[in-house]
Length: 243
Ligand code: BV8
Ligand code: ZN
Image (cartoon, rainbow, N blue to C red; front, side):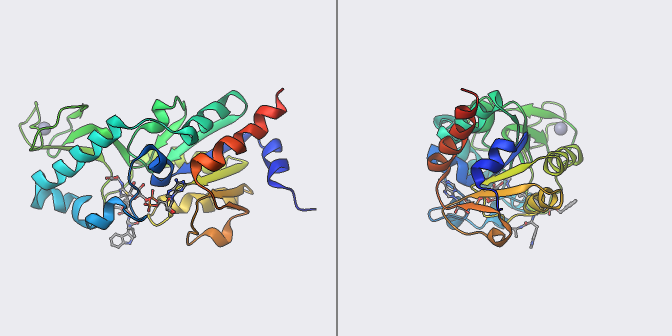
C-alpha cells in the first residue's frame, strides 16, 4: 500500500527543508535561473567568483549592494513562515542555498546557510570578518585590520563550502524522515547532492517547484506549485493533527 503524502507527513518526526532562490521569489527577490532571474542579466561565473572580484571589485561589490538593498526591502513570505510555524509541531531544520537571511527573519531556529550570508563580510587578505547592513559604498570597504578590500562572506563558484557547515547539512540530510526540496533547480553542486544522502537513508523526498528539475525523477511526491501556494497547506496537515 503506497503511503499518501499526508500519511507520510503525519508519521514524520524530523523534517529537513532544502531551499533555494525559488522560496524567496514570492518575496520579490529574483531567482538565478528562472525567467528574469539574476543570472540572465549577468553571467553567474562572471559575478559570483573570486576572479570576477579581482578583475572588477567595483562591479561585483555594486551587484551585491543592489541585491542587499532588495533583500532589506523584502519580507519573509508565507512559505518561509509556514516552515517556521512547523517548529511548534515537529523537529525541523532548514538547509538553504540562499544568502538572503529570510529564514532567520521568519524565525526558523535551525538554519544551515550553505553559501553564507549577504550581511557578512570577510577580508580578502587576513582573517578579519565583519557585518554589513545598509551601508552602500561604491567600492568594497577596506579591512580595519590590514587595509585590504573586504568581500561578501559568501561561497563563490569554485570555492569550497565551509567544512563545519557542510557536515551539519549532511548530518541533517542523513537523519531526516522527510526532505522537502523547495524552490531550487538543483543545478549547483555540492548542494544538489544532499537529497541523495536523504534518499540513501530511507527519507521520503518531496519537491515543491512549478517546474521540473534534473532530479524530479527521484522524487517521491512532486508538488508543481509555488512555495506560497504549497507550504501553508502542507503545514496545515500538522496543525490539524495537534488539535
Ligand atoms: C565547489 C552564493 C569545489 C553566492 C552560490 C563547471 C565550471 C566551474 C564550476 C563547476 C562546473 N560544474 C560544476 C561546477 C561546480 C559549481 C557548480 O555547481 N556550478 C553550476 C553552475 C554548474 N559549484 C561550485 O563552484 C561550488 N563549489 O564546487 O567547490 C571546491 C571544493 C573544495 C575546495 C575548493 C573548491 C560552490 C557553489 C556555490 C556558488 N554560490 N551562491 C551568491 O548567491 O551570490 S550559488 C547560487 O545558485 C545561489 O546560492 C542559488 O541559491 C544557487 C542555486 O540556485 P537555486 O537556488 O536553485 O536557484 P535557481 O534560480 O537556479 O532555481 C530557482 C528554482 O526555483 C527554479 O527551479 C524555479 O523553477 C523555482 N521557483 C521559481 N519561483 C518559485 C520556485 N519554486 C517555488 N516557488 C516559487 N515561487
Ligand atoms: Zn584584513
